[in-house]
Length: 127
Image 1 (tube, one colour):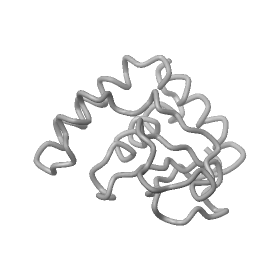
Image 2 (cartoon, helix red, strand yellow):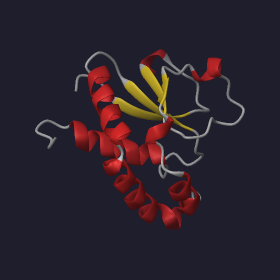
Image 3 (cartoon, rainbow, N blue to C red):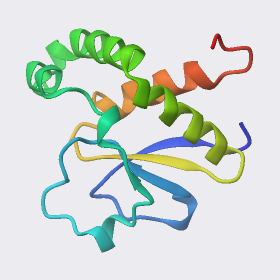
């Protein structure tokens, strides 16, 4: 990978350094306009299912269970595999920023998705 894979809150200002910006939430961030988000893609299908998201409830004690359940969903999701290929290709040319709406910057779906993507894009990965 030539460029960085980053995560950023939807409520933080978009910057040129963000490169290719992808919203990775199933729901649109409250109060944000398309213009403000400056997205290149909205990939709803890689977000956690409603069931997994609601079980998490953004409660720290539920995070490890959420992480495990979401990683399982990603493994079974053909759209996630395609998304990993897209991200890998984009990273050859520019940074990629996973945009999310959650308040917590350390326990959210973008953190888990980034972890999953990095594992699937590393050299010598299993296909």
